[in-house]
Length: 344
Image 1: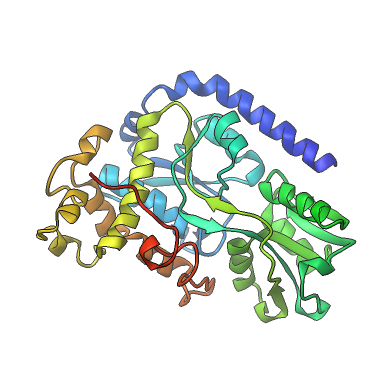
Image 2: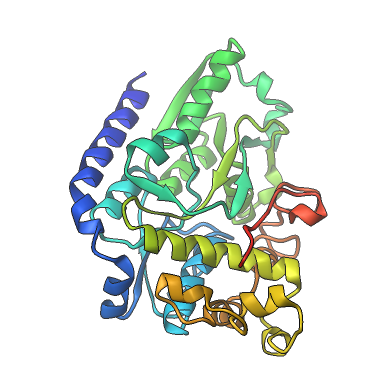
C-alpha cells in the first residue's frame, strides 16, 4: 500500500516539523496578527461553498467565513485576511511553519492529528461523511457494486485511509488513482481515468455543482465514515485556540438566540442576559482572550451567525444545495448536534 506509506511519512514529517516549531508558537499568535495587520488564513484549492475563489480574486465560503469572523473580531474588519491556498498534502506543515495562523479548509478532526501532530482543533463547523460520485451512465447504484473498480482519491487525507478500510471491511478490491491536487483528480475522473471519485459528501456536492453537466453524475447513497470538519491551530498557543473556538461557538450561539447580521444592533438592547453577554453589553468575555468585549457583535455585524453562513454558502438555494433540516448540522434544538458551549 505505497500510498498509505507515503501518507504516514507525511504525517511523521509534519509531526517533527510541528514539534520544532512549538517554541515559536509560544509567542502569542494574536500579537503577531495585530502587528502584521492581517490574519493569515489557510484554505484549500478553490471549492464551491467552502473556499471559493471568485473572478475578482475574492474568497467566499463557510470556511472562509471563519477567517472573516476572526478578522472582524480582531480588527472590526473582515477584509483583513491574507488567504493561502494549499493542497491537502502540505497543509499541516504550512501551519506548523507559521505560514498561516489558522487552517480553515474542511479538515477532519481525528485522534492522530489531535494528539500526535501538534495540532489543536478548535471545534466543528460542519459534520460530514465520505461518499462516492460516479457517472450516471455507469448504472452503478451502490458502493457495494464497486468491487474491482478504480477510484480517484486525494492522497495524504483521511479519505484515502477510509477508502482502504471500507473495501477491506466489505471484502472488496479496488485500484486507487491518487493525486494531491483535487482539480487534477476531478479532471482525471471526468476523463474516465477512474470509475468513481471519493471524497467528503460536501466536497462531492460542491464539485458536482461546478461541472458542466452535473446531472450526468450521481452521489451513491452510502456514507462510509464520520468526518467532523473544523478549524485548526497550532498546539501550544491556548489563547489563540480560544479565540478561534469562541468565535465559532459565538456564531452558533447567535443563531440559537436569533441574533443576525440584520438585527444585531437592535438585539443589543435586549433584556435577555444570554444575548447581552454574547454581544458584550454585560460582562467582558473578550477580555480574557485579548479581544474587545463586543467582539461577537463585530463578527455578527460583518459575517452573520452560523445559519446565515450555512444558507449563504451551501444551503438549498445555492448551487451546492446541501439541505440542513434534519441533518447533523442542524442546531441541537432542531434535531441536529450543533451545540455551542455556554457563553458565560
